[in-house]
Image (cartoon, rainbow, N blue to C red):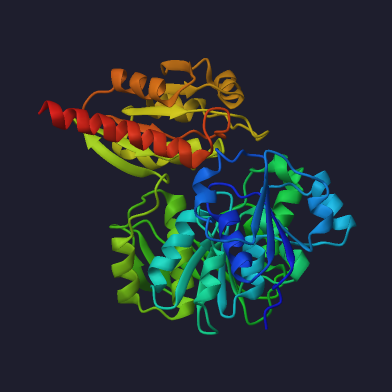
Length: 460
């Protein structure tokens, strides 16, 4: 039975990263009467609109949002980035409209087992690593990964597994369906997206929704080394702790992942080397073991994991200089994490491109971390950059500021670099003053690297 044929559906935010597009396609194919509203213009959304050309039951309201569209439609498909304080959202609620978003809809409708991953840092890498470890057969990847998730419903059955990255602003919606993933993974709980949630306590509360509706048949996998998670309470599901010792799954100084003293796998050939990445990898291994993956398979797949674009991505090495793209590092604490990852190999050879717009987050004192390990710091233009500079301005490390294009910042990095150095773009702040989003920022960095590489090839 098709519950959506003839239903009037408002897609609130088409966007450029696939979510709105996927939901528009889904409801159009269900025979719904679809309206798409977006503040962007037709020209700005041309790429997405072109993909919907064949659907005759879609109309557009672009460059504006009209109140009447939130009153006359039966279902409002909300872009997850729209905060709960939105007046239009309140208008739809007052008129008793069914309000959904893509990820919530998939979690509600998915017929098989759901693995959900959240955390302030490391959730994208952990999500994709879990998918890599448990394999491709009837396993689907989705969530906050710059692609549409709704399409997995077409192929899924009761034996399917969905591995979903679930950010905090999506977790809040789980209260409306009273459902949590069968296996929930929390990498850490830090200080991020406070401006969206309205405070740290609200942010932490949203994160806990990932296990709030679990039963005693479900699993919650936490990083015991995280100061918030180690005191977690009121768990109904089976709690699995990951840590350096005295946990259900441990990772030791030799990079061995163990369970009850027995070695499951080793991380020496794993792509990421920091302690936080080791803990995230151990959580992924614990998930794979729950699913039933054998140790030899886990080891082989750990060794072959290549990581995601924009997450400490080694883009290229040119004339002895290594270029790393860490554009998805959008919280200040991520700068420290990135430096700690690379300082062993590149101590005092790190040329760091950072900065951007402030998200009202606490900026830790990074003075010693930068001064002891970074050769040169280059800052983008932005309120976050100024906030960071105010904290570290007395350090001896050379600081160049404030660059209003990536090309200018990149060229400055080239001028101060020498063979053996590493140029890392790890912003630690939001991108919206200079870029469409953090992915656009990452693409522009990679473009500069590849342009340099091609120039060198032509000269050789």
